[in-house]
Amino acid sequence: MILKLAAFLLFISFNAIGQKTLLFEDKVYEPQIKSIQFLRSDNNGGVTSTASTFINESNLVLAFDDLQSDRANYYAKLIHCNFNWTKSSLSNLDFLSEYNEFPINDYAYSGNTHIAYVHYRFPVPQVKIPGNYLLIVYRDGNQADLILSRRLCIYSQDVSLAVDNQLAGTGTLRASNQQLNFIIDYSRVEILNPMEAVHVVIRQNQRWDNARMDVKPSFLRDGNNELEYRFFDQDKSFNAGNEFRFVDFRSLNFPGQNTAKLNRTVKPFQLYVQQDRSRAAEAYTQYNDLNGGYQIENRDAPEANVSSNYVETTFSLDSKPLADDLYLVGAFNGWDRNEENKMKYYSEKGTYETTLLLKQGFYNYQYLVDSPSVDANYIEGNHFETENVYEVLVYNRPFRPNADLLIGYFVIPVNPR
Image (cartoon, rainbow, N blue to C red; front, side, top):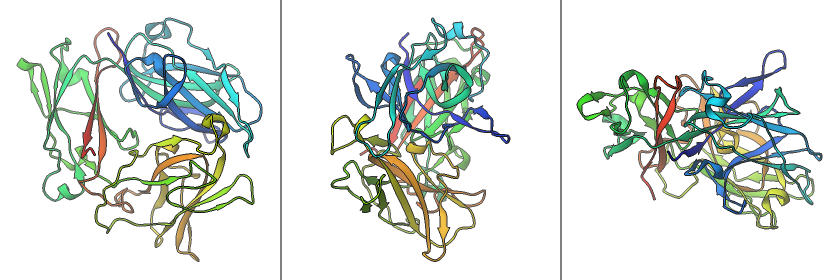
């Protein structure tokens, strides 16, 4: 069986008394840990690109920076999880052929940068069964001293999927929503009770924060070994959103698009992104983006991983004050809504602002409203023409092992360019 990967994120935070608590969501623990990515390695050990899905799991490399001048002793471990990211009952020997603690020995020191850092890389070990895994990193062999974690999904392609091209929502939802209709064929795998054993998860642009978990089929065609997913309710469709905003500071000698000002009189440099405004009432504008992703790149020097500078990057939004919290989100911060990414309102300027320490590169981002009553895309707007990439993850829980296995992973582009 050929295993394949889709890499994701895991969450770690403080609890009320300041201890480190591992939560099965997307975050890092310590603020000096930056620029966490999964990368694709070539046969010679070099890194070719950022990645989320792999044909061969041995090609997956976790990379991150530690903004300190000295190397630390970091270790990594895998945890097998069920489809809903709760820890499964499997033991380490059920999914690994070796001891489940791996020292991170591949590291390099930054050179001639305004802030010193150590760049780490860790090749993800091969596993024996497909499923959800949490990759945790901790200090000095002490699993309680957590540093970061990321979700990753290793899958086998034991089922097939046919897509219905009618992707739009119904009625008045068409202008703002996107809907997926598809059929899963499980004739190649024995599933005794598919309505109970099969769990389907749908994601938009590799996000877990708005994923549709445990989506139930509309129809079971038992004689054909098929599960049909045809959705008519708004809770099963996705807000289409808008194309992502972006800023390009791959070069600090010649800053790129959407950079307004670069202050070189201080170190680290201070970059001011061109001021944004609400796009909710604007017509849809088509352009290519990274679907919320980001790329670390340095056009001023070679070896971007260790020569790129960290920059104090200020984002601002011209807006009236909102009743709810506003956050700056993207893959670079795991779509997280925390104090660092929360926008602060300045009434004297009539703007929301936040400043983040970001490594030289090309970044997609959006403004997200956290509200029980207002659309999260209130600032960005929703347009059914928006280009998005959806992922369908199909899990099955057989009698042995008694854990959720990821038996199918499918990418469905909507409005591809």
